[in-house]
Amino acid sequence: MKKIIIAIDGLSGCGKSTTAKSVAQALKYAYIDSGAMYRAVTLHFLNQHTNLRNIEQIRQSLERVNIDFHVNEADGTQRIFLNGQDVEDEIRGMEVTESVSEVSKIKEVRQALVAKQRRLGADKGVVMDGRDIGTVVFPHAELKVFMSAKLEVRAERRLNELKERGQSADLAQIRDNLAKRDHMDSTRAESPLVKAIDAVEIDTSDLRFEEQVTKILELAGQKMN
Image (cartoon, rainbow, N blue to C red; front, side, top):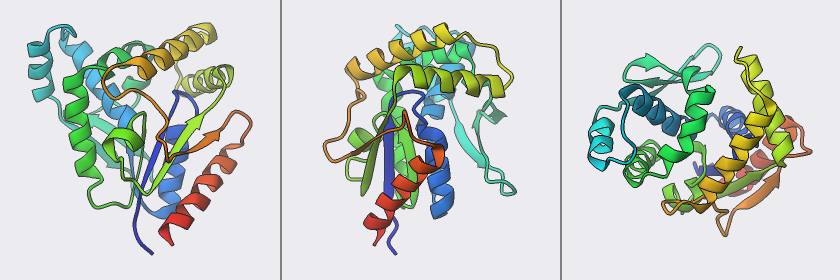
């Protein structure tokens, strides 16, 4: 059975990451959360007080970024490390969430992270989720999925996710942030969020988590065989 690349793109809060993780675990594939990489860079820029309108500052700041994923072999959970520090929880907070779309549209940031993502998926056997995986990072991926969900559903999911992490948040603020990110991600000049022509769209608004995973595993099985 051949190894393939599975590219999962879609809107914020539609379940991309959790679904991609489960698909990767079921196939014994590597899972790469590209969104976490952009969040880590955003956190780095915030910590370094990087001026997002100063290209030279951005380039210098990027040179000091080292991103790694560490997997706990006992339970399969994955955490992201920024310059040797575990920042998995920190990058999910609202401060980073409010700034990540602004950072993600910077050409130099996208070029640096796309290059790293391509290296990570060079040997295939990878599930990667994000916003430009099937259109820019891996345009020749064997399976491309575009996930969507209603705004209200996504806001509720994000609120519950933050609560589970012990973080306080306001539903209206989350909804407004998601709507803002949808607009910024889909209209930015550099690698905008669009559905690839050959992607399979899955609306998760009324799907149980297990159904989302099963749908993608069935599609992957067809491609692998």
